[in-house]
Image (cartoon, rainbow, N blue to C red):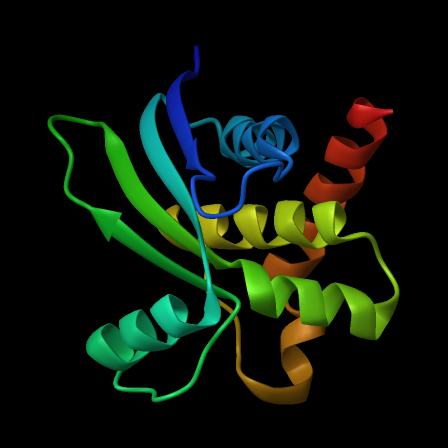
Length: 147
């Protein structure tokens, strides 16, 4: 199946963000799942906006690293919006000692997998879930391609 993907990364608030890497990460996730027609929008947002969206849509009054929404598309087209918390990603990257660009790519993949129907448990088991394992494999391939 040929992948017909439209990927848009909005970096208006954070110019200089690794847009090409984020697009590559999203494309890798879509290709791994063999999806046909897909439209994905990725927006990089500050803490305040992520907190507002998290409260509005999930009734959680705190910032978060990623939010993903699957929207209805025409025919067999998958359409989704992924919101990545740039400030939260920067904190997480610093905590685990990885470059910010790596964490942004990880979160873009994570959100894309949610759009495609993946989910994971909450709590300590989440890092061992099939979704997280797939996410890390996709990230590794994305980063290797970027070298």
